[in-house]
Length: 460
Image (cartoon, rainbow, N blue to C red; front, side, top):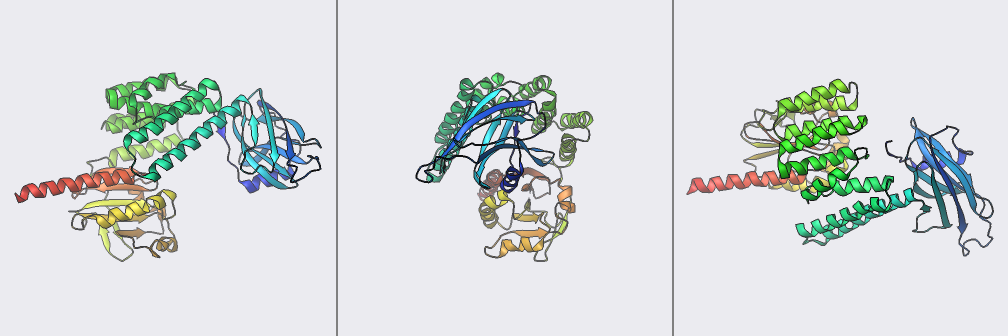
């Protein structure tokens, strides 16, 4: 059964809590028994009357908020109720009193799970105490992830870190996550932690990924992501053929709802090995087996990429006018390396990478490179905000057509930001999607170093 993790707007939850009665009338199959007690700190309220706390577990059905279970405390602060959930998963749990929301937390609903919930209000920095094997596993998983983020931030923020130091932090977190399943076998948190412990080691310790991968159950919710990591690790260790054999075996082994994900990874693997014909064949099969699905749409885009946008292919022709009125065409840019960047000025990844992007654009030799940025935000006023305070080097283009602009469609842009590096002959060198500015910078450094070395040899 798939894992469900719901995220609901706080305002919507507060309204629903005020309107709920005894809970949903829907006879959902997953039933958890919940009981507990709330109290108030004596320095806040010394009456010892703890009535009126309402605790509710909520979900979403067809976009509407649904109360999966709710209860109100009596004078002694105790309560008990049953949660009925549509499927095993993580749902919001809220406690309010007098129409004021006091805390929002995460509640794991699992069939036949018995859960104890308690808290002494005001909680301050403390969390609602939710005790059961499922909820303990989820808490352990979340705590391990949080601590990892803190450790990585401290390492990077401190400067002077080495690859060995980074490997040590990642390996430590991976070991903690791997061991959660041993303590809480069969739980949502345990299964997620076990999968993530493999995924995060890819590229850092490929042999460990390969050795642990067979121990991940094929019905694990993250099995596609695990297979993706294992495929790349196997490819580095044993070659592309061994990686493809792994995916073929996984396609046969995983549940039906995961097969399309494995097929998509097969397409990527073939493309990585420059086997475009084989990749297109699998994409065609993916469309045939899963028509009118998101996977079919993905396969169409992948096929277009494979047939038109691979390294070494001539880039689609384009004719643009930048914000200064300068004409930028694929023909008049020949003779230069061109970075063609599709971005949204408000998108978080672009905002984070903007300083690095500007640094790259400002330092590239003008006689060799052109940095062309194409906004997919159709509102000109939003685009112009970019230039209010900081100089933005490069050429900037925008159109009221946004993502539907011809150049965006020709370059099959569906992820923002997307960047293409074109060579002086107008051919594609590489494509970078998402947070990949470092990869672009590394490739540009390699190109510039090669040009400089060639110039030195010619001058001798």
